[in-house]
Image (cartoon, rainbow, N blue to C red; front, side):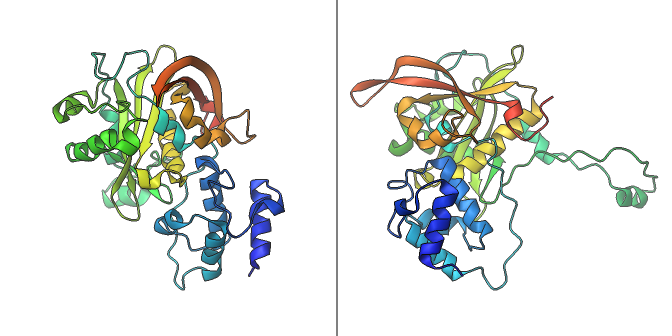
Length: 332
């Protein structure tokens, strides 16, 4: 087992920081400046070291010293096989979604009339039956013929979070997320509070597909991912996500947004997906910007000067894009 100073040096090298920059009391976000992308990267790295790190554990950890104490605790005596973690290779951070403004792209502002292109088939893919196996064919009294291997369905679950269909019972949570003070000013209505009937009516306007983000550990809803204003002729759409306040700054939402982006690229032939982000959200995910990180997948493609207003000043709105060939999927 590593001593604490050895553990700190290992973390420093992983993060590309000087050994002297990390101490037991160093706070992951405030002192080390880790954004959502790098926080999830660190989380998955210490799990690889054998740390027993549940979702609840990670949300409680604030310092390197607290992370080392989890390392010293070691893995549980009878450790269940963990769920595969969603790859963070696409570099899509949670902060992008938290700052995005769905339904405010080319189709107009949220709450105003726009083309409603609801794609309910995107949800029903989870209910489809898997192709029959040879054993199932024999049981059915048929003969299985050799052919190419069956394609797997899209992935909807990572290690911590999963994507769930938006059902009528989901609406109260989504409404609360949209209007809660900690999140509402960053999300769809930018701080205004629509009536509940208005919110229900507009939930699918301009939306191609959307999911509730759910905790695997607790089964409770914690966020919202949305793809909207698609332009099929030109091969792009807009995406965004919001996460509950108690998950903000943990990096875990990166996992869900990564799953969502891969899902959209799997189902539709888009070349790229756009994120619209108020400038004050940008520091949360700068590690995913290709200009700042070799492993990032987001490209800054536009800047609307002094576009958004918050707390007495105007802020730029950044237009970032993730391309199909920047993920690990088939780029054809």
